[in-house]
Image 1: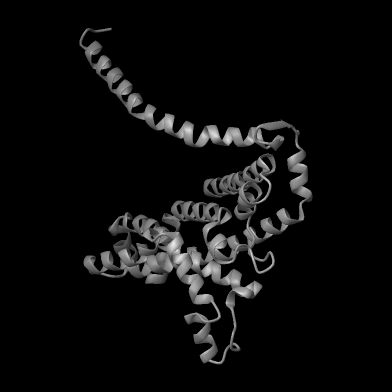
Image 2: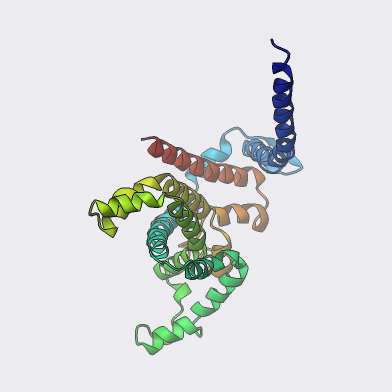
Length: 297
């Protein structure tokens, strides 16, 4: 090898080593905060008993989970929340992105984008308690419905199974949409402006441009949004725990709330609650794999 090539290769080797050094701290954090807890939860899911007196239980926790009526109800409720929240957020994100993209003033775009994103930086506890007060029988929302003659006096929205589920979905849509709007809007803004001009010169109208050009180009981002939103909905906890606590009855009882109660509210059942946690992770993983398969087509 020529001598002049050796310093160049040495430099490249040093650069690679420096990159690895920068990555190592992040890898350690990921291992400690994510990978290790996952494997520990998996290990716990095959055991039962108290934390200091665990014994191997095999797949007993998973068999119990399959036959558990409460688990079946919480799984069904979680799926219903996904069907209510995710499609609505996708539609809102697309419509908001189209509206933002059609605005010519950059200053106005920034203001509106900030308004959309504002719920994302608000504490979930704060807005959850606010919306809970609105829904009481003497709250602003209930009083408004009574004054309009839609419901009777003393009506409490949170005591109706269907309405409480819809109300919680609306809260989540309001709180989460801004994040996904910004992601989708950034993807649309990254498209070369020449594509729009070419389409307009060919006589395409705005609807045709978005349907035939823009949406297909940002399809990977849309699939990412669907994946993130679905995973967040399967882990829905704060809004449920603070507003309805799973009620009325078990109509808003979700997997995450059931897991929490199995560990911290009832007699601590670490093995079974870990099995529930693993099932939530597998649901998210299966859905993510499905999205990846769709993306490759």
